[in-house]
Image 1: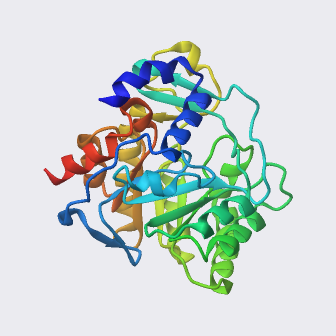
Image 2: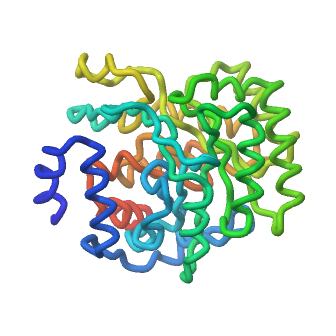
Length: 328
């Protein structure tokens, strides 16, 4: 109800200013607090006890500014980031575009991040409980992106509940090349070695793109399993523009998220589950903006689910509504 009144003012702002306003609202407590999750939704995944299967996807709280406030909305876990080793501004603005009629967003942010040290410092100061994942990225100008990911594993193993290796953003040139078998094998070997050397062993998942053919997908699943990773996030934003009715927005470069991504990401999720069986934990993301969509994601094979863009259009009450809908 409150968001219905605020939305016209937020949508009068450019998307990044509206996002900043949302962060400030969470920091100042101007957001609803959800009731406790129903015990029926509890699940233990990757050795972690989740009060419910719904999490906040990476991209909203890039710099770990509002982890606890986001958990209070009804999410059982929050994934911060993507975080790069060194601070970087990302791509030039404007770089986020709303497709309002389609409940979608196109972004080409390009891993704008305050860097490892700033994000680690915030997470280290937390005194409250809650499951927090850290989504790791690589610097755009890095001479060794594999080393960037290994560095992230080493840096955040003491404060993260799990780590996500993001090699599927379309907004850092050449990053998706690490999804190819040879590059992915080398990357996950380095990541695995960094995990074994860390002060504590944390689960690691790999976030993939939705724009993969069957052969590439099968190779990724087998490589992730062989490397001893714990799971996959399916999926990141898409280069497709299917479902975007505004030609002006569709012409913008970047990855598309939101409602049009639900069906293709569910199809991909089902394919990954068929390939992986019970060998991997799957976190389903893409297009969730209702309890019905959340249930479809779970039926498609997800152990856990995440959303972000849906909250842009449906407001901060959405997580609690989805959790209540899943209970029902």
